[in-house]
Length: 317
Picture 1 (cartoon, rainbow, N blue to C red):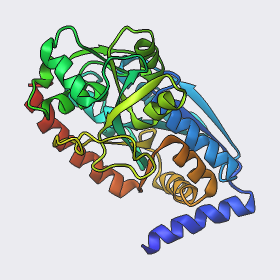
Picture 2 (cartoon, rainbow, N blue to C red; picture 1 turned 45 degrees about the vertical axis):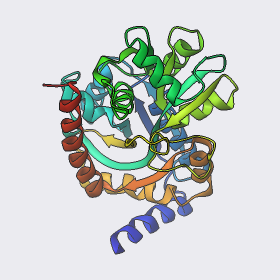
Picture 3 (cartoon, rainbow, N blue to C red; picture 1 turned 60 degrees about the vertical axis):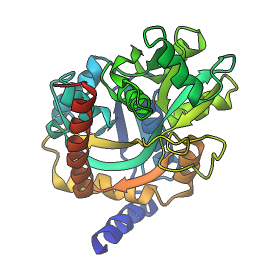
Picture 4 (cartoon, rainbow, N blue to C red; picture 1 turned 180 degrees about the horizontal axis):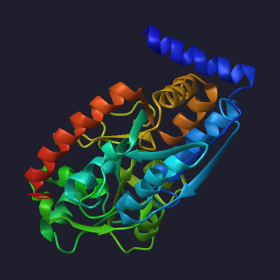
């Protein structure tokens, strides 16, 4: 506790003294409009507006299931300046499934920042009115029912949808999943009528619903979110399934501990600011701040849990 207070105070002093004028560069493993993009840009926005950092820049490096961005981070250890990679549960999933040749261990975990939940969205004109309609359509003909996601087959959007189907006693392994490159393209696939349902993050689902282009049928929180009581959870509908997706940041390998502590101090200060609260509330995120040691423990625990689930669903053997 004393260490955490010290980290927060250090970052606040940096901001107050004007010493935190260094720029920070975020590498985003997917295209515009997805959860990684939204998270990096939201954090960067709040860091600058709260004057914890002087400026934030962003680089979308999609490709290779996130592997291209991780490879870039590994090379960035020879570059000057503050460079952070945003990532989430897929860095664990894709390593387990062999979709990328890296894992979180090839980078330096810095901190977890927020949690987001999975959500399932349809177009406004969809005949699917609720989650039971989804289950009925899948049960009637699994091969004709398409679910889109902004990640590759076997990755998070696919796994979350398969888990939700399996919770109803159906074969989630038979799910016909259509992968897109990040949330923006997956949303376009839904709105164009290419697919029946979109599996995405709750924050992206709120954006679609808020624009009047779609409806959220269900989400994967353990209980109804107080700010959005109109959205049922899979669990509230009687199915024993929840899913929480963390989002956090990683530095290049061999980043000095002092530099990691500096990053952690900035994030610890950030989540106390009104600028951050505005970004968080706008996106429907849950604060889940975990400094480095706690973050690494959570990554290890999630790796064990996801491996068991993926084996059960037949995603890996």
